[in-house]
Image 1 (spheres, rainbow, N blue to C red):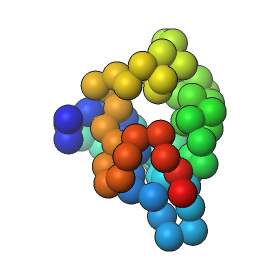
Image 2: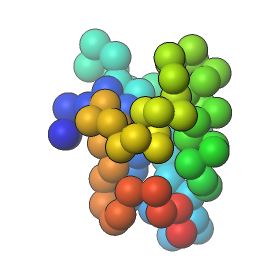
Image 3: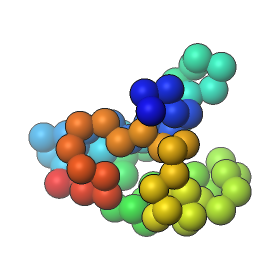
Length: 73
């Protein structure tokens, strides 16, 4: 899963998780998510189809690094 195109990094000491999309080996920061709703909004803004299903359905397109998925603090 380390090569998933959407990376949700470990929780920062101040809360939230950086969200990065990897396209052709280049990482682009989408923002810092403090909830699944934030993550869904980031994906919606870049026109990812069905972002709700990707996030809430635990898709293999998303790699959650460090800690449990869907936790932000």
